[in-house]
Length: 478
Image (cartoon, rainbow, N blue to C red):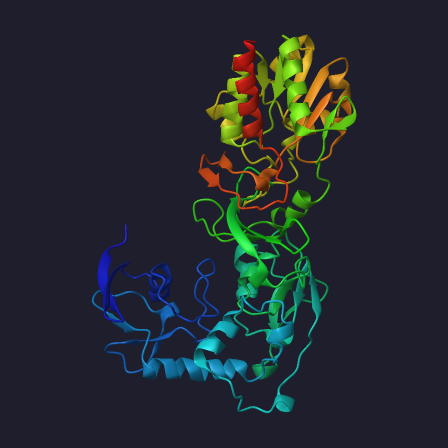
């Protein structure tokens, strides 16, 4: 364990690990320090010089990203002298930068814009016509667009492709003030994590083709969640908006820092999976092949459970812990069997040695926690003797509808699927990001999600449905 020492920052005493980088302490303590090239996942580079600080006893300012912590050091991040140094560095960054904030997709999330507004550089000393120009729309591949003029050459994207993915698609081309970021000939940006360079870019140089010009970021609301694309459970921000005359809709996922789980990044497939949330939604309850009301579908479900003594509840590994507990409690009340058999989520070609896992479900670990069997033999034995199957996951039966032949079927789904066609009762439920719940990832980390979606007509949650069923069962003495 590193030795802890005391330092002073702007007159305030702090504790920090001896030998650690000064900029990490400043960032961890939420002390404002402008920076472009430094990123905690990529380490120091020292090329932008924006993180200058004054250190007592040093003749000239030092960059915080390459200054180790020493016992008793006194640091100033504020003051007329050091702020003038940073202003001069920022002015150099702005010399060739285009004046296109109103049309830039990064406006509202741009560090150069933030630092510019802090500095008050409202009059340029450089004639607009004399600025160097570069290519404005470069398709790098992998859903990433590059505007070379907006780049501040922090090289975060270059270092990500060399140090994190090891694919080395990006590099700095040309020299001096004509330097630009680009791909190597015949080698487009193409790796499963490529879109992370969009988040890493502190300015509007790298943008997502998927999100580009879809929304202004200051209109978006956000809540914390996890990706349900695999059992890693990477932490994400869910950015959504309820536009006038429209329902609340998700517009993008962004990685959220969690050093226990995914660090700073997510895979591209998980990032783009928000499209699955918005499309092909199942919205109207169905009873005996006809559209029905929610109340009627719940009553029909209760009737089927009451009249079929041999029932099997089939759970999916994307259900929350709370949903699994409630379903299990209902199954016990009506003496139904319960199964978590779900091999369809396993994809041996998907996983890698970084974040992606072969199990493409969010909460399989909860089956072990709550003693839900995943055995194929037990599932088939229970299915054979059951006259009623209550399905909370469609993937198993969508590939083999014959398993439901001669069975009464109740299905509870958020999206349209083949299993609905075989269902006597189908109830539309809230989707993964419309509900709150707890999930356990492949490493045993429990993570709570609290949804803040604001739908016009929110779908019924499984928890509410099961609570209603339990109440009806208690009253009906089944």
